Length: 136
Image 1 (cartoon, helix red, strand yellow):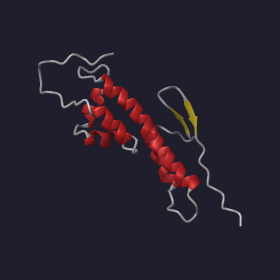
Image 2 (cartoon, rainbow, N blue to C red):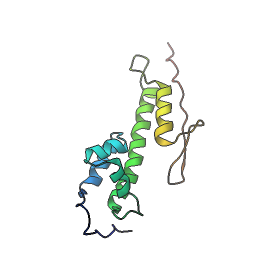
Image 3 (tube, helix red, strand yellow):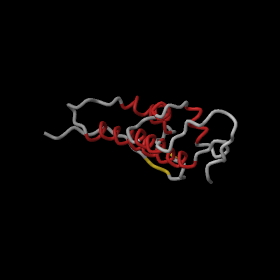
Image 4 (cartoon, helix red, strand yellow):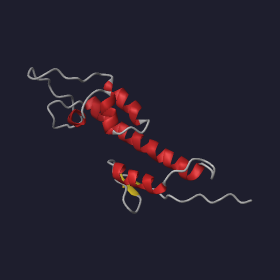
């Protein structure tokens, strides 16, 4: 679906061709939709309007970038959680597993059974376990 026709009514769009690249780059750092919106100088309402195919101001390239951004954002959070939970040793900064779990539940729809169903109807099983202490 192509971008909707631009009306001669209302104020000019703030949309710029660089916005998709900016939101992808920010999401790759774990940034939320709110942070991505701020980075490009728009409200979250405008952001969601631009990715809504039913909107009169729908931006297909922005919508496609948003879909990619959501995957990159979740990957960032999962990688950082894994790094703290599995890779770092006992002397490294600690990640609060409960805070991380709640963040993932609220941000990416994780359930109590740690199953995440993404928009591609693909199931990702995640198990979070405490690393075992090294044997002496």
